[in-house]
Image 1 (cartoon, rainbow, N blue to C red):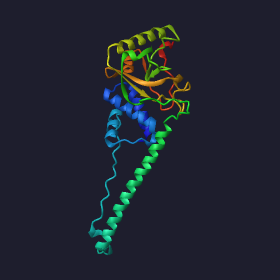
Image 2 (cartoon, rainbow, N blue to C red):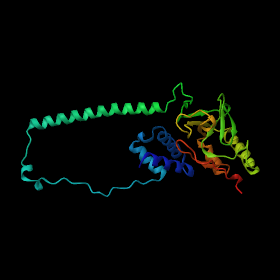
Image 3 (cartoon, helix red, strand yellow):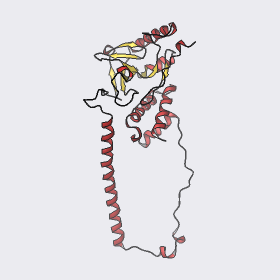
Image 4 (cartoon, helix red, strand yellow):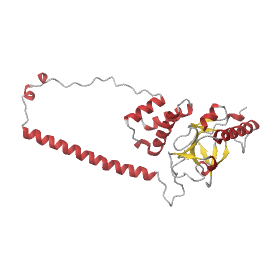
Length: 267
């Protein structure tokens, strides 16, 4: 299955909200790798098996029977009688070992060059207006006094110029609501987020925002905000708000988001 197909299935699985904590954490990590490396993403067999299990995908089983080698009795007589001398066998053996060693070394060199190119393409240079994302993909402990709550889905770290949009869900607006129903639910969502983080063990995981390349950290990308997941006692606060009817799932792609769901003012 292609990386883009796997990334789409991961986004669908995250939006359903029926995952265990380890499954969600694992899928988020793999999704970040697909976003960063695209088709160059490499997974081990064990990681791929865990990924298929988490997204509920069963790979097809090849029905083609293994090809068996013909027995020596079925080979032409001239082939059965052909024998190579020990010197020829030794030369061929040494040549094979040399070819394998050279191929392995060449693969390491090519892999290093490709990795350096891909990694540098996602690293913002000092002259670029976009800002590099610190500690992307790593869970970091977060104290309650290190941030303020702007809305049900937005916090602001102390000293940060802009807020951090919590991803994977969307809550009603409490600052500029479109209707009274949204204003009421927005205040409830913000209050509930304050309750969730009041006495919990908190962790923050920064991730790249779903924006065109080169716009991270600018007003053209999520109004200049950063993006991340906030966990309270090991659980994504977005999952809690969605389960309590105070938010709806909102999963974006690698470089763009669908229309923001706002069902609260629908007639």
